[in-house]
Image (cartoon, rainbow over all chains, first blue to last red; front, side, top):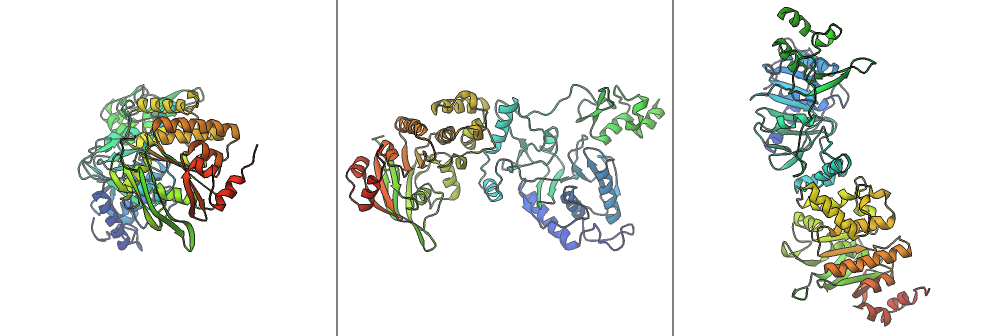
Amino acid sequence: MTVAQAPASTEAGYNYGYLNEQTKRMIRRAILKAVAIPGYQVPFAGREMPMPYGWGTGGIQLSASILGPDDIFKVIDQGADDTTNAVSIRKFFARVTGVETTEKTGEATVIQTRHRIPETPLTEGQIMVYQVPIPEPLRWVEPRETETRKMHALEEYGVMHVQLYEDIARHGRIATNFMYPVKVNGRYIMSPSPIPKFDNPKLDNSPALHVFGAGREKRIYAIPPYTEVKSLDFEDFPFTVETWDECCALCGAEDSYLDEVILDDAGERMFVCSDTDYCATRRSQGHFGPMAGREDLAELTGAASENEGRNA
Amino acid sequence: MNACPQPMIRVRGITKKYGEMIGCRDISFDLWPGEVMGIVGESGSGKSTLLACLSGRLDPTAGSVEYASREFGDIDVHGCPEPIRRKLLRTELGVVHQNPRDGLRLGVTAGANLGERLMSVGARHYGNIRAEALKWLAEVEIDAGRIDDFPKTFSGGMQQRLQIACNLITSPRMVFMDEPTGGLDVSVQARLLDLLRNLVSRLGLSVVIVTHDLAVARLLAHRLMVMQRGEVVETGLTDQVLDDPQHPYTQLLVSSILQA
């Protein structure tokens, strides 16, 4: 995480990490400030990146500023390592920094993500980088930016509960399922970006550092390791996470976040882990779900189907 | 209420200038607990400016407003730190806007509007918040079944009653009303005034009410202040001012009432 030492493998004509050194410094300063004030949104001079806003420009700038030559980089999109966005970002950094990349959560030192926190518990020294579309948790109740800043400064967070009240009044329960607001370190209310509320408890007292970057709105915020992160709720409607009646159809996991996949026109469906690495690891360890052996789904299991053959 | 030995608010020399233009000039008065003061005057006479200065939403050019707060003791509304001023506006002070849409959140239901002030002072029990909201809906004669409807589906009169309930839910001691009956038809006006008069006397509220409708003033206000071009031209008990106006402008105002 120091100054440029362009290894031979990086793209010629580009600075190490794509951004110039001054920009990276500026972003690192913003990150340091964000770490010092957990949950506070630090403005930064976001740069144009070689991709459109909404594709993760905030996260990319953070990754570009913190990736050192010794880091091992992992990118997930919707929990998957093999989706277009994840593959492109991973390739981008492999080209402009030459860092080693991985799909294994346990091996990675920097994980850039959108939507998910890996199921495998994070450890000390790991950094989670989030791509944030809307950093302001109060946006939906108070559209004026001048007013929301004042509300953060004066800790006027009563209106945040108005949103949760609305949920209960309309749906009989807190129906907010992602971007579920949290209070960080007993002070700032923060939007944990578009992760499902299933992942909120993973932020609480996490041994890893979590940094959030919003490219369009040019804000950086962070949760330092071992910080209290509390999801907002009512006394009589406590915070709960999503549950599923089924287990993962491929690896049989009952403790992971499941995606529903429609299989055919006859209405057949399956639930699979959204975290592909977690699912594949479990399968390689010999865990199988109810649909794991099906020939017509071999494509979904990918490399894992070879493991299956080997284990058999 | 008689036990309270000091005025609820003490206003001294409030002046507000918009550049060279004068909003209101050198206005002083005391308002006692449980007292209702009417401010009447023509359009542009500085009534709303004065009201905004009194409630702390507008910084006056000169003068002071001292408020005897339940929580903070005697405080200078404009000299105190902003967090306190904002807290007062959510708890002990209420502001009823002429247009209810300025005082309500239109994107959330009536219940959430009512609950907002409770939640902003730390209520975190959904059941209790809802019970309190229902109680206040009944208080302002809105059907309990409308609690989960959006305020934009309410009629003008209902919106205004909802706005009043939203202000009263944290039992403020002092309410500022800016033409609460403006834009309502006469029969709705009458019901709203009746409701207001009952609430004010039952809760012992101090009220400053701005209106250009002398009938409203006569019905609600104990005391009256007549304003013209930013200055107070006449002040006194409501009946006295209306029945025996001294200042030429007040005389004009009183004589302009259409006799039905």
